[in-house]
Length: 362
Length: 261
Image (cartoon, rainbow over all chains, first blue to last red; front, top):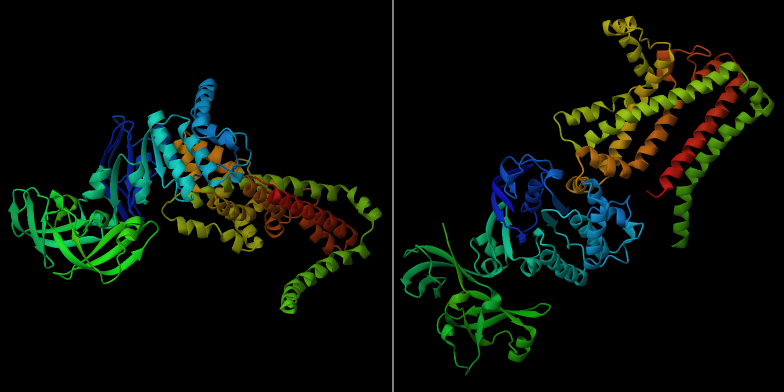
């Protein structure tokens, strides 16, 4: 559906790319990255609002690199929605259909399909768009973008200004739209929760480069670069050296600990790796409980050195007894209440091999 | 605390009250020279009616010309990046800094060049003609229009234009259907204020078009002529007309600014 080939764009001193992206029809891709990563610049370049420095953009197999924005049939929902204040709600929604000279009866049919889907019946006749609530404005802007039935819908941080409840409702609505209308969506966000909730596929962009593109689980559990791992809040990262390549994985050593990690292609003895584990993947071994087969290795005794409380979870900061390594362990509040840990307590943890990720360094 | 607040408010209001009193004194001091009989008598005079008509006509044409040039120029300065933009942005302000008399001199002298003579050979003559009045006023007000409209365009969210493009508008279409309607209030205000500036223009107009009675004499130059000839009834009548027009214009601006887009 959309493909970019060695796409490079520039804004001031910032350079985007080269970006190679391939997004199929009906899919929902999340472009995730920190602020200033170049996500919006990538959208603007694909939409033709900013000329690319080099490379190509293909839409439905057609090279549109030199096409004007209106020829690309991409709809765009920017962060600030950009509703037209001089038009009423109906005129805003019908703007694209009018400009593209879509037949009136067809426009009415499409509008009648969108009204219930986006719950617009009560506000369609409103005169002043500035009197709409944040969620209503969002739905009007979505309807305006969808009515011309674009080939693609680009969303740029569309929910950043909404409160959590409305945000969740609209996120669910977006999934419905993607499935019911079959529109391909490229959704830019810096919000990781939103990304993992909505994206079938997620692309992570940092410093103008597309660092990783993969499924939810790939991105979440198997980051391919240290930048991606750090951006996705992997707190437990260790600098390791490969000591032995074994049939079931690699034995790595570093920071005074030994870890059995998943195997890595073309790994060689003495090679340096970054190994890591998400804090919620660290298992606390309860005393007197039998250990399952995947909890037989990477067992460590540790002391609780700090406890941090968040909304629904607690983070236990534990220091491994054999080394100076400190590991964050995330526990849901209910588990924390049951276990009743306090600073200074001893416990045993397991860094399961299948939960560990490794990235070759250099 | 209350006393301090009151003292603060009074210290802010007092200069304003003094200024209003000063302006009212200026206007009311004319009453000794003004009577309705003289006013209507003066209005029936051909040269005075001609000055009023010429002023209204020339100010309307010059401000329309200025807006036609200023809208694209201001948009270009607000939105388009091009080499030398900073220099041009500064250069555009030149007519606002130069005194109108100097501007008038520039126009007049330019007619004394080979290009001016060539145009004269084709029958295009500006000095001491109505077209000269329009050109002088245009030269003075066009920079003001550009400055006002540039700030109007800068206040419009460029994302709205981009969204319009992606919804099927060409660059011109997006300008017509989104930018211009959103700039409507700014454009209206610019038209009214530049028109007001044009109708009161004196220096450049006198230098370029002169003050020929019934031909190129405008309201301000007629006031000057009447005062030079110690014709106080005529000068006061012309001033009353100018004050009336100015008040109407200011009222118009207020109505436009308070009207919701």
